[in-house]
Figure (cartoon, rainbow, N blue to C red):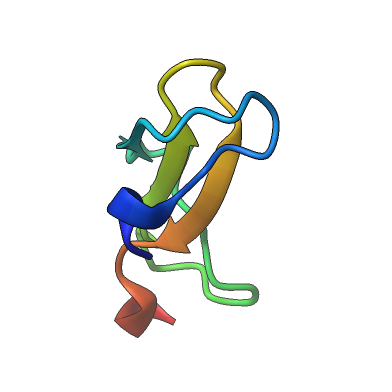
Length: 63
């Protein structure tokens, strides 16, 4: 997703950034696998109002 071409559907801003949840409790875990750390989740969101435009799994190979 190209951040330069995004327009926020809530406030109309075109200023976006990315953030990541990667602590042990914020990772996405595979269903049925017990010995895995899962993957961090990356959010692309509007810097003005916080509307999330994209949610992406950082390491899909973990699944």
